[in-house]
Image 1: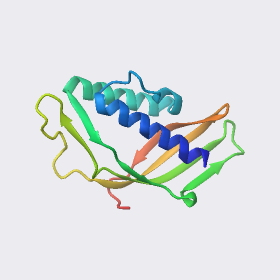
Image 2: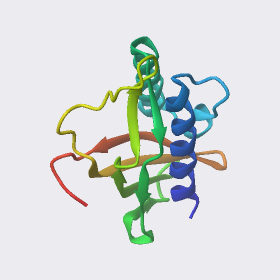
Image 3: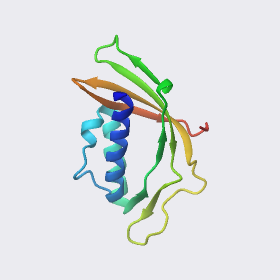
Length: 135
């Protein structure tokens, strides 16, 4: 499904950006817009300022039933619910190689992402993590 693919594409571009604390050479703006694009840019900038990069990649689980389409709206919109697992994606300080993960950080939680269709391309407009819940 195009909605799930758009979210996965954004995630792949975020992994690239977070691995080097830079948006250079990524296509984040192709898959994110509005608040989501600002949030990604801000996070990459903060990581760059703090010398934090990421290793590995998160695991994302989404099923077709987790997608709600709003095709009657203009632009077309969708809501995607998925499980985000950080157990295989770790922040660390580039200079020292030491972990930059917060102690007792929740590593697996649900995310709700909102997307809208721009011409033929779906883009993530915002996402919300529910770290109080499990998936």
